[in-house]
Image (cartoon, rainbow, N blue to C red; front, top):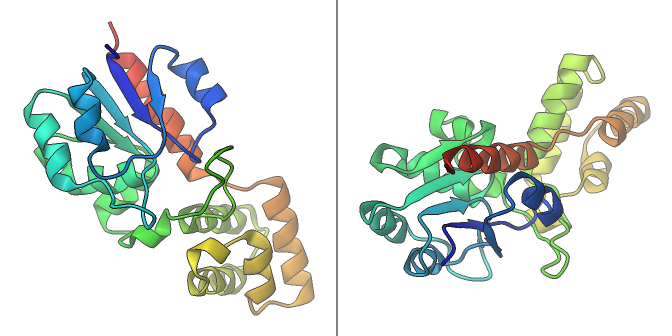
Length: 213
């Protein structure tokens, strides 16, 4: 029986995940009922990183609470895991990473912040989550690659896009920017994009590894 089951999708590729936590069983993004099924299959530690949003019913709070009461450790990060951990950490779920921290602090509120579309066969992301766009714009500000009005215009454009259409080319096209500002921001995005979701997924896998005797 698998001692560790991790629900993982576009937040981190399987090759990198297995290099960090080779003994886990990896399953696709979790839908309603999958957490309970993992516990029934013998998992003593469940990593909830990615989960479905629209195509199926999302992971329910009750099923997470049910497996926590049964003594199963549930670690959440990055995407659906960060959302549920921010809601349930006071009841025993463990949250890891910056996305979780921002939800917990109320800096982020909407599921839309972490939503994206991806190729279900390859796991490759086809759109950019808003939380990564925010982090990249924050980094551009800090590096002096974008002034505050430029970052604000880009963020406003990103928020206005429906999440399946939210890509950097679309954001840069829709943002009200001068050609120079657009070119400078595009150059930063090409060379120094920030992927909070991947960083948090890796942090969660490393945390789970630390739990293994």
